[in-house]
Amino acid sequence: MELVLQQAVEVDNLPDEAQFRLWAERAVAQLGAEVLGELVVRIVDEAESAELNQQYRQKSGSTNVLSFPFEAPPGVPVEELPLGDLAICAPVIIREAQQQGKTEAAHWAHMVVHGVLHLLGLDHIDPQEAENMEAKEAGILASLGFSDPYA
Image 1 (cartoon, helix red, strand yellow):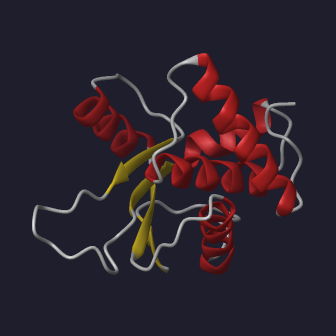
Image 2 (cartoon, rainbow, N blue to C red):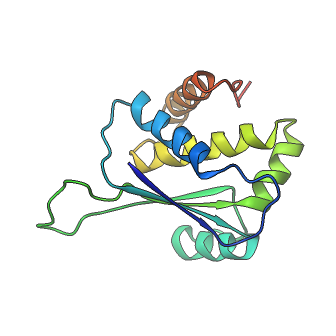
């Protein structure tokens, strides 16, 4: 999997590209998925996050991570198609990490894992889906040395 890291906002202590790649690859591997294409991770500010959230989810305000799975047009071969894009809002990540008593690295990792699971088709709309997704996230994060983000 190729990772493209786009930084649209300056962030102190931003994890490096290798960390983002490791977190994304671990999420993909733990689900047994095979991804050959690229994943774009865009680090955004609250204004861009809010704009994307309104445009694509019809929800106001910024949010921690937005996932945009790639959907191949009919007739396009499936080898090496992009996984999709994640838009991760740096100010929200930093604020939530402080509020939740986590390290910023732990919360960045969690949001990458969470976003990649969405790209791979998992969701948390109903309680059973949420429980399944949260368990997968906790297991992936544990394999990376981070504690359960839901504990």
